[in-house]
Length: 104
Image 1 (cartoon, rainbow, N blue to C red):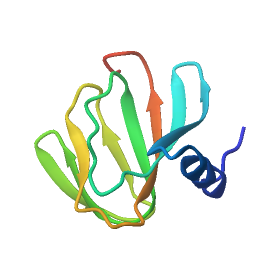
Image 2: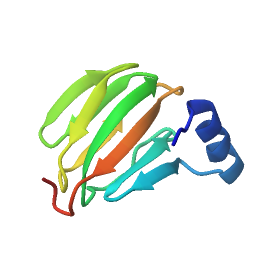
Image 3: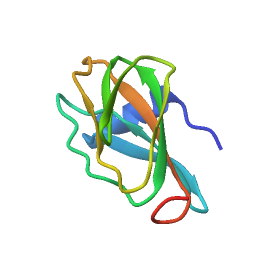
Image 4: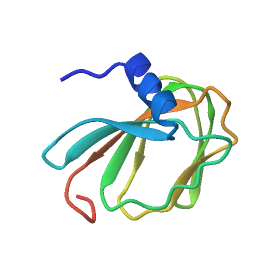
């Protein structure tokens, strides 16, 4: 399986959505996520990894905050409040959800 950033960005634009699923296997699935001005996500049932494609900003993860940029990998445990803040207009990230509900 393969998904490119360009293909997925086209899907986002065609469907006028903030995220689109690239593929899935077992408990794992991969999406491309491009929030617009604000990130309103809520905690998820699975652990997740973000692989930043472009842009920069701050990642709030539980009680901590870290600055991120292209190429960075970020982790959020299942059920933990997390979001992106003060991100640039070009911010795009892969999101990889995996494992059982409740996290590993």
